[in-house]
Length: 382
Image 1: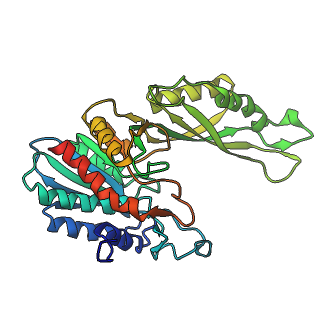
Image 2: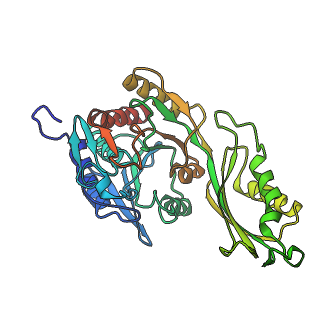
Image 3: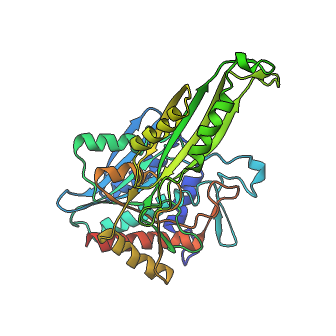
């Protein structure tokens, strides 16, 4: 809150965004609201709509110098049962210095802070070198097909250059600025169908049980030590998430087995090599199978350089100590920007409540975010 008791700029904008129930892929005018503000601040805004997904690309400055992109999303996950919340998830409410609402932490608070920081930077440095930009999508929490993945294809086709990318994902663990995300693992998903021959359980010689056939191969996939890690990345992991077979009767050998599994992998691998390795194991066990792969995104890693150094310095100032520099967690849209040649990091609020009932962010943290992002922008673009 301001000294007059009125909501601060970032708090007011965050509340306005939360009040729009923009569950993936809906945007419900969030990006138009932001574009209007940034246009008044001198930004050039381009709306890139693919299918049902809205994307916003807003830039300030020219190409003479580095390009710094702030990356975020305006979509949120569903609230779940409204009655489970202490207050309406899409009617932002402040209680005891904490702002509650779906998207407060993931990531409408960061988006609002981006906007305020960019407005302040453009006003203070109207003739800065290089470009500062904001890229938003309404397809981060869903399949991520027509969001930043598609925008990156457009950027690649027209030769768009990005040097540095800061994603506002909620990365802090206990206090704002205590963690700096410098990379993420890749994600590769598979839908495997093992084909057998249906029959009566009393006559197994006249059938071929795909469950029995698949068990040794699945055991090998699950037990395999894929690598020993990479830099600060943990070892690659394969997790089987679902197995389904059968007709519901206990006297029928099923004709097929369906298995869903996912690999989270470090830069020791790429998706193509992992697919080959997995299928080699399936073939070695003599399985008849079909498999459909979905490449969710390759891993990325930002080594030591200007971006990490600037972020470390700024976060230490705000958190009172040097941040942990991590490659943990799931995935983010930065996985689509990194292949364009950009160095990518993630800095955002505390992530303890994201995707949960009563999602929230401390108002003090929210109001510190624009200053944090502005300090980082000025440190990089000075």
